[in-house]
Length: 383
Image (cartoon, rainbow, N blue to C red):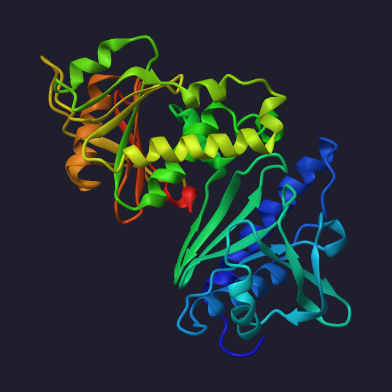
């Protein structure tokens, strides 16, 4: 490497190293085999540094989109191996970026005695606990690892944007009133789900990712199945009520464990998720039961008769150093956030997922401990 160092890389590297070392020990105690020793802080710093400076360059006016995975070629399944490894340098990464910009293709990075850290080729299947550094946008890096070979879910460890560092707080999953969706996003739900593909909670994770991806903003209300009480908080008639309910996601979720291991099933889930998430781009709220039956979209939220107006929400973000704050719902956004907070205030068994056009994402849930609506800012976990 030549040129100036990226200061955030040096700051965050020891924290990321500690994360991987801890989980490598945990995996060893549970009999899981790692692909190699966890990366040391110097290695993490070097990969971050190269990825950051590459993200600020252009190749024929295109912004490079690359993902770097730290693993040896002999641990990869069907690796594409270069005859001559590339140097881990911004210029080399930018040159090869057009070939690997599609989702699911990663550049393999490893250290050898002759060249030190270098890019040895490409890989598509990432084993669990393999460090992945993704260039999400110029100056925006996501450090993450895979949860298991059968699951498409990555767990974010840290997000770097310029001089801003956000390290995900693993302890957030153990806080009172932590919704199951947030626990799954953090990656600390039951290890059994890591090996069984997308479980019921992870359907919501995929919906959140897809809602954020369409970039138009959206509101998804998840209500108790078999209970029509949610309609007391909706203006009727509903412009786009779905009768009978659209049940494709619910049926896929009820499939057997064997079916959920197939690529055909996963592709069907992806299509159904994108179809439902696309409806959230329509003005109003999309309503989904917690059994994943689609009930309506374009619904207008109103304060339930006799209920007080929501005046404040507790807001947290699952990153280290975050402190809970109490704000008016409009401090999080506009009418969409206020409506979501009011709905959860009136319908306390419901959860509301709100995507903003600028990429922010908030999960609203009722907090019995605090006796208030809790807004969980989770965009850091969805990148």
